[in-house]
Image (tube, rainbow, N blue to C red; front, side, top):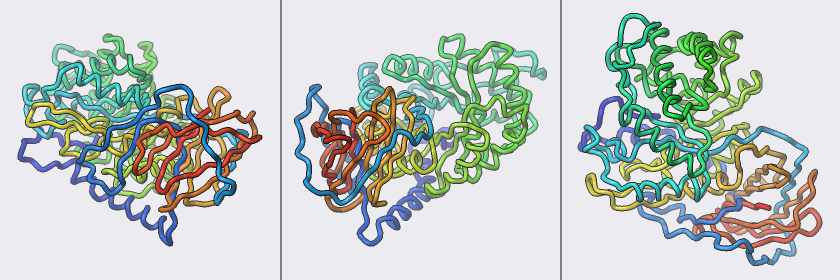
Length: 498
């Protein structure tokens, strides 16, 4: 989580948004380069909601979304010819998908609305409105992951004592943003489908430093014990968020030493919690931060996943992490990034992370946030502290084209397109194939999709997001043998589901 460690006043500039302007420009430039010469992209996904014009102001509410209202969609006519061939092969097995999610702040955390101070300065929003927003994320588009933005420093503002082997729990804070509020939100979200949650502390306590390995392990164990006592033992835990960020500034050696102490203690106390590293700012830093732990056999045994963010560099930077993940047999997570508004840009980033760099989990920056920060899926509108509603932004629908239908446990399989401006990815779960196709072109494209290696379905349902459609259920496409032909609108995402 890229956030300031001091509370922001209402007059403070939105530093989070400003700090991300650079990386967004880098990605925009990369996409413009890819579109050179009139080349575009089309996405095929199966969903049913809706999307806004890519050049719209992301702070303006999008049109109400449409939903799939019945189990039977009308049959669609198929073009008699095609421009692009897409070959899907279930025998070409790749990574197992672990889900899609976001980082989450509390509704009444003043950070959410760009304010400072305590709970009284946070958003005044009722439980029913909160649950409506949560349902949009965890039921409507099927997100399954939460990265809890537990406030740190502040959990242990003063060292409890000088002995890291003896913990005075009374000196720790767990109320509100320091744990309790997140635990309450998580329990509600679990009832809506969340299956994976994890903590990524924003910083060490102010009295800690690079030499505070034992104290930090004590801190971590105390927090994890508290969550377990509340019935929500985290399946995963990140050592620290963005270790190379100036507010944290700890080395890969520090992470290694923490893991070597923390891992055995977790096992000794019967925790199922697994460790994630390095959760760093971008792939180049993440490689450096992760290596000391991975190259130490004693430490490496406790690591369950490698996570990185995508700030300040183009998507291709993810190529730095894939060899490391493959070398040590670990899944790769892109655990924090966002784009300000363009649904197609976010779709292409997701496609490339998953299909080109073997990423198995994708987490957006914020699930919901106030309008001062555009890096959210759902924009919370307010006047001062008074809640005035919410609006789904274009990346919400792009994410749903994947998250609603590419479920945890799905295996990515082979999908090859004859045109680089039409991107395809395919997934196999319980014998059923889901195909997502992105048409980046500025014109309509006709694609012929062939499925090999598994019994082809009789038909697939099409859900689409475009400039005028938001996860809209379009219709049913009947296969002729092992193939079907479909028309892909300009700048669209299509998901095909059995």
